Amino acid sequence: MTVLVDAAADPKGGEQPVRPPKGRWRRTAIIASFLAPALVVLGALVVYPIIYTIYRSFYSASGDEFVGLDNYVTMFTNEATFTAIRNNVMWVIVAPITCTVLGLIFAVLLEKLKWKTAFKLIIFMPMAISMLAAGVIFRSMFQEDPNLGVVNATIAGVQNVFSDASSYPGARPRDGFGIIADGSTIVSEAELQTGSSQDFPLVGVRQTDLPADAAQAEPAPAANDTQITGTVFLDVVPGGGGVNGEIEQGKSGLPGIRVDAVAPDGAVRGYATTGAGGTYTIEGLSPDESYRVALPATNFDQGFQGVAWLGPSLINAVIILSYVWIWAGFAMVMIASGLSAMDRSLQEASRVDGANEWQVFTKITAPLLSPVLIVVFVTLVINVLKIFDLVYVIPPGVSKPAANVIAVEMWTVSFGGGANQGLGSALALLLLILVLPSMIINVRRFREERGR
Image (cartoon, rainbow, N blue to C red; front, top):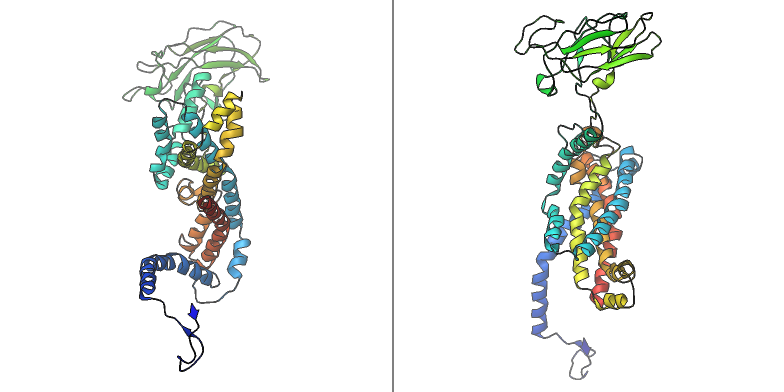
C-alpha cells in the first residue's frame, strides 16, 4: 500500500511507501511459525522425494550414468509391466465398484434391522485387521489341500454329502496279486474261468480309515460253474507279522468294493459288491468265456482334491475378494453417515404418493447419496492403485507374476532383488501419474462441498 506525500516535505520528492504497522508483521510471523513445521515436513516427505524420483529415473541402476529415457523405454517394453498395468486396470474396475455397491446395500438394509449396530460392527471389523494379517488369513483359507484350506474343505464336505466317495483312496495290490491298469483300476494278472476264485490282498489303506462295518477277512465260498468268487482284504496284520497274500487272523476284509467280471472284449459281464468280510460272488457268468476280475478305479479314486484357488488363473479373484472383505465395511460406514444426515421428508413424501421401496431407493435415496458415493468410490480407486500388501502376501511363488501390480513391480525391481532403482523410479512416477487424476477429483469435490 502506498500513499502520496507532499514533495516539499520530502527532500527526495516522489512517492514514499508507508510501512505496515508492527501488529501486521507480528501476525505474519505467527502464521509463518505455525506453517513452517508443516511445510518442512511436506517438503521433506513429499516434495523432495518426488523431485529426487524424477531425477533418479533418468539414471542407470547404479545411479552413476545418465541414461535419459532408457528406463521408461524398458518399462513400457517389459512384459511384467504390462501385466502389472492390466491387473491395476482390473482392480480399478472391479474392487471399488464392488465395495461401493456392497457398502450401499449394507448401509440401507442394515438400517432396518433391530440389531443394526452389531451387524455393522461385524462388517466393519475386518478394517481393524492389518492388510498383512488379512493376507495371511486368506492364503491359509484358500490352500488347495482340503486338509489345510477351509474353503476346499467345505467344498469337499458338501461334495461328499451329495456323492458317493471312495472308501479306499490310494489302495494298491500286494506285489504278485494283481496289476494296476488305467491309472488306478486293479485287475487280476491272469484270465479266469467260471468256478475259480480270485483274492485281492491290498495295501496302502490305514487301519483307522476302515469303514465301521469292516470285519475279519474270510475265505470266499467255493464257486459253481456260473460264478467267480474271492476276497478283497487289507493284507496287513496290526502290530506286524503275517504272510503276504494269505487270509489270516487280524487281517480285515474291505467291504463295499465293487468287483467286475470283464470279458476279453472289454464288456462287463457281471459284478458284485464285497461284504463285511471282504468276500464277493459274481453270478450269471458263461462257462464258455474267460474273464479278468477287476476292481474299478471308482473304488480307489482320491476324490475331490481341491480347487487351485492360489493358482495363476484364480489368484487375482482371491486377492480382490480379500480386499472387498476388508474395505466393504469402510464404504458402509461412510455411506451410512451420509444416510443419517439425509433429509427423510423426501422419502416419506414419495411413500405417501404411492412409491414402493425400490422406487424410493432408486429415485430418492441413491441420488441424494451420490456425493458420498463418489467420494467413497474415488477414495477406493486411489487405494487400489497403490495396493501392495495383499498382492505381496497372498500369492505363492508360482502365482506372483500373474498377480503382479505396479506397486509390487516397483518394489521388486528396486529392492526385491532387481537392484535397479532407476527403473523403480520410473515405475513410481507412472503410479503417481495414474493416482493424480483421482486425487484432483477428490480435492475438487471437497472444495465444492465446502463452498455450499
